Image (cartoon, rainbow, N blue to C red):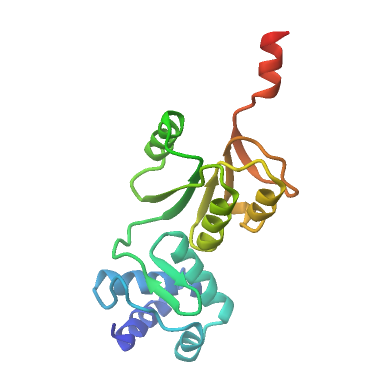
Amino acid sequence: MNKTRLFSEIKLLANISSFSKHEQLIQGIINALNQKVISRGDILPSVNEMIRELGFAKETIGKAYKELIARGILESKNRKGYFVATDDTERHLKVCLLIYAFDTFQETFYQNFRNHLGPNVQVDVFFHHNNLTVFESIINSNKGQYGMYVVAPIDSPSAISILEELPMDKFLMVDRYVKMNVPCSYIVQEFKQSSYDAFV
């Protein structure tokens, strides 16, 4: 990676008045990827290095990096920095889909879900098999790596507290409803009342 050229790509956009600084940083990194200045696997300059070179605020750089992570263009490796995850700059969203297992119902759900998202969305599928340890491990290892979390939860107080660590504005509960301590979005099946109504 040529850091000087990367910084040049970002600075070139400073004269575009319609760009905020975080948009300038995002587009500069995308342009650098498109021009092969940086490529998959490269580590980006640290936040402090960006501050020194560009004069941007820490929050501005953090916001830009988080948006690029949400798109699946960057990934954050704990205490190692920010890395280029893909050369595909057309990607707009990276989704973590955590479901029980790949049975017939879940496969149908996945196919319908995937077909309605469009080509610029990356969906990574994980299975927890109703195992709380696996569930917790998947959530913890993927926190902060996605722009959206779509989760079929485990009905357990421990699972609820694990889920509440995710950003609720990027969270969608599917399949089974479990009551959370914070408001969240959900699309679920309702079994209790409809089963009761069918037999009464």
